[in-house]
Structure formats: C-alpha cells, structure tokens
Amino acid sequence: TGRRMRASLGVRPADGRRMDYGEGDAITKHDWTQWLDERAAAGLTRRLRVAGSPQGARMRIDGREYLAFCSNDYLGLANDPRLAMAMREGIDRYGVGAGSAHLINGHFESHQRLEDELASWLDVDAARLFSTGYMANLGVVGALMGRGDTVIADRLNHASLIDAVQLSGARLSRYRHNDLADLEARLERARGERMILTDGVFSMDGDIVPLAELVELAERFDAWLVVDEAHAFGVLGDQGRGSFEAAGLVPGERVLRVGTLGKAFGTAGAFVAGAAEPLAVLLQRARTYLFTTAQPPAVAEASRAALAIVRDEGFRRDRLADLVSAFRAGVAGIEGLEPMPSSTPIQPLTVGEADRALVMAERLDAAGLLVPAIRPPTVPVGGSRLRVTLSAAHDRDDLEELLSALRECTSIP
Ligand code: PMP
Image (cartoon, rainbow, N blue to C red; front, side, top):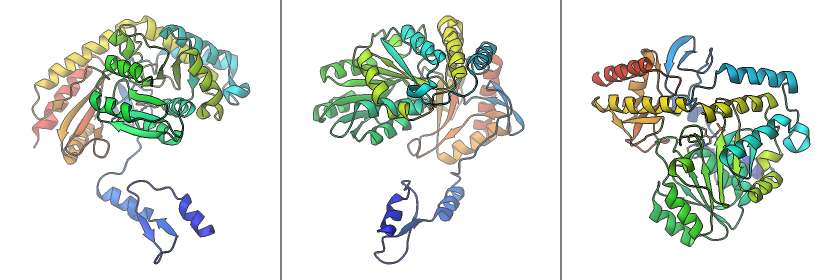
C-alpha cells in the first residue's frame, strides 16, 4: 500500500509523461526530464523575465529598455505617487505584515475601510477582501457550491474559475463561449443548486459577456450569477463600475461580483461584492479567506487611494478609450493582422499559426516592444495571436511606435 500511495499522490498534468516500472506494477513515475526536453524542443518552455523598474509604459526588463503592451495596469496606477504615499503612511501606521488571517487578528482598520468603500462604490450590501483574485474565485465558488450542485461555466473562463469549480466538488458543465442556447439547455439539465459562472471581460479575447441575457436566465432558473470583473472594474462603465454599469443593469440579490485590485487598481488583492447573506456565508466558509494570511494592511491603504482615483478620474478611462479606437483604426490598415471584435483594452491580433506568432513577437522584442504571443493550448489551433493590452499609461507616440513596428514585422515574409 505504501507503493500505491506514492503513485496516487503524484501530480499529473494532462500532458505529463508517465514512466511505467514493469508490468501491472502500481508504481509509475513521471519522466520530467523527457517532459521538459520535449517542451523545449517544441519551443513551449515558459521563460521568466526580470523587471528592474516600476510597472509602466516603458520598463527595464532583463536589463533592456522596453515599451510594454502586456500589463493589466489599465489606468496607469501601479506606480502612481499617491498610491505610493498611501502605502508608506499605511506602513507607518500599521507596520508591514498582517501577521495572521483576517478572522484571527489580521483584519486591520484599513481592510475594513476598503471593504466598506468598495461596497458603497458599487452600491451593494457588502464587500469582502481576499489576498488575490485567484483565491477570491476559489473562495466564492467553494463557499456556496458543493457535491450535488452544478456550476454552468463559459468555456473561455479564466483558469482560476475552472479550478474553483473543481475544488468545490460541484459538477462542472461548460457551455460554448457566450452561447445562450447552450447555457439554457445546461441550466435545464442541471441538478442541485445552480450557479452561472462567467468572466465579465474575457481575458484572452477581450470581448464582453452578454449580461442582460445571463441575468434573465439566472433569474428564470433561480441560479447564482457570479461575474469575474477582473478586467472590467475600473475600465467598463462611465464610473468604472464594470459590466453591470456598462449594460445599464442593477445586480440582484443572487449576483456576486469578483474584482481584482492588481489590474486597473494598480495594487494587489481582490474582493467579492454582493448581498449581505452570501457575503456572510463567505466570511464563515470561504477556505481561501479563513486559512490564509491577510494582505498587508498598507496594501489596502494603497487600494483605498486607487479607488478614489478610479472613481474620480474619469479622464483615464476616456484616454484609454481613445487609445483603443486609435489602435483599432491603425491596425485595420495592416495586412496579415486580424483584430478581434473587442472594445476593451485587451486587443488580440490573430495571426494564425503558432510559429508565425512567435516569430512576430521575437521581432517586436528585438525592436524593443513587449507583446506576448499566445499559442495553443491557451487558444485554439490556428488561432495564435499577439495579445496587445493598452493602458492609460501609454500615449499616442507609444501607439504610433507599436503600429509601425507591427507594420514592419508583418511585411517580412
Ligand atoms: N480572473 C481573471 C479573469 C484574471 O485575468 C485573473 C488574473 N490574470 C484573475 C482572476 C486572478 O487575479 P489575481 O491575479 O489577483 O490572482
């Protein structure tokens, strides 16, 4: 049984190679050497880059100056002096580490104030802070759903939402991207408690969820509707209040929204916002809330400063919207690049084969521009793309530089 146990404890990535030690033997072992070699040969090894300057349009990375089009710092707040000052003051007042989980003695005034301010900004009963968006997603699904329940999720949802369902023990039913008929059929067949789970803005395509229709279906089937607003809060809607504001909808009692603070807010952490009762359940049951150290209170102070800017400086969203339309107009004239139907700062350009995307990204890199190539299995075969993300930190000159580099790299065969 010792042998069996060792075998069953092994992690098993879908494409990991297993080595068999003899016929029918329970012991198998991953051949990681071979796996790593094969990834490298296929050009699929992921590589870390090291930044040596603050987040922004121009960054020093691996010792070179780059113009970067890959961050989620949509409003250009990650290095805002007001956030930095708030964080310094937070350190003076509360020190550096939270020291424990929220429910022990790690929940500081700054966390509580940030939660209250987020709730009032979104006009909901309550908001609860989590240390990352990944953990917020695991927390909200795991607290409300379990064995015997069904989560109906968009196929293009973020990885953390898929993991959240798997960890919860609920049945995962994935519908075709934004396909309402498929979603409805799955809602009909679903057993136990039902939850519709979706991104507000899809992180790889940049498109927006058809929210009015989802709200209607959720109400009709008495299902929870959980919307991950990671790429929507701060960006969508006149006030930056995300996909509901953009669609002119007011969320009901069975809607929960997840926001991340590491993107448009420029800091770190995340929150779940909604009605009093589900939020009370989260506090009692969300394991990624209960069993982890609270984020440093000074970070929450920086997020409070960020919220004030997200709320009050609408010109950042206007500037971003201008950049998005100028980029789309510029790209429309470049042969061999196909923009996707996105109105958000996530502007993927489909280029076709994986090799082509890689070569183009390398050429852009050589020209000092950072634009990631996204390839299968992250996107479908033949759908490899350059994923451009724009930020209010960019100006029109930065955009011109990107467009001319794109023209250059597509003109070379
Ligand atoms: N949801 C979505 C849609 C995301 O894109 C991300 C981050 N890439 C997350 C959740 C996770 O957020 P965090 O980085 O705060 O863990």
